[in-house]
Length: 353
Ligand SMILES: Nc1ncnc2c1ncn2[C@@H]1O[C@H](COP(=O)(O)OP(=O)(O)O)[C@@H](O)[C@H]1O
Ligand SMILES: [Mg+2]
Image (cartoon, rainbow, N blue to C red):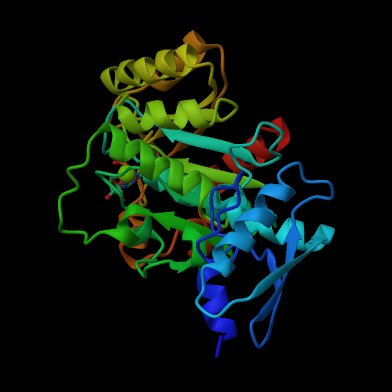
């Protein structure tokens, strides 16, 4: 006796000629009825008047007829409902779970860049994101600093993200921030030794296969300098705005200028400079000491014709908050440091970047 399963097994060998996937996987098999040696298959086409319908019909017939004991095969063609078609499209395009890289995307993407490491790029990323979140915005944070990831630690979000079928990655929720970090995918003590193409693939996945949901802002912690990841980001996100993070030192500001040059070359706009470790306010006398010098960030901003968006003081609460996974703008929003971050967030909001 012929079973339904046997017929389905045969139908699994029939490919949709356009989509190049088995019709069984595409939800195109509506029904299978077996009556002795007679088999009737209901097949749903993606669109009415599908030019390849006769080919599909033929292939179905041939596949089922090859089953021993089958005497006749009849095929009934039907058409998918708009909803079924949409479901199919969504299944076929995991890339489109995220709309961030689409041309008409409304998500405002800000890349925090720096010429070198250790200047506080991740600190700025996390606190800017947290400040925008506190201001009621829907914010995603992407830690694209694949070699020096630290966002997962700074937000205490080390758990692995859930991966749904079709490679859809669900970002980790941290107080309503949606976070994806390399630190969730690899062990913090394992060196990442990936090269260009793999890094490109990773960035591509982070941007296109993460179910970011409805975002207003995506803040990206980019690796320092002008490496492969920075180039991939620039290619995928030509409309992203770049915030340059520097310390006051002339040298740090100058290497940041190189990042600005690269951004310019790929058509990304550098919109502002953030000076980190700008000064230390003495808790006793209240005076601001400019420990790392002064003026570098201001000069860089002037050269680039962009605003200096904020000067973040040296604050011992920043490293400790970073280790605890508590951005200072959340744990101590009233401090001078937090007010600077909120100021940057407001500038970002007002500028409409
Ligand atoms: N304004 C600041 N005051 C004190 N420590 C800071 C400040 N900004 C950053 N840090 C600390 O300096 C270190 C490097 O900062 P991080 O944000 O990780 O830099 P980057 O991402 O540029 O490498 C971290 O330990 C961080 O907590
Ligand atoms: Mg960092």
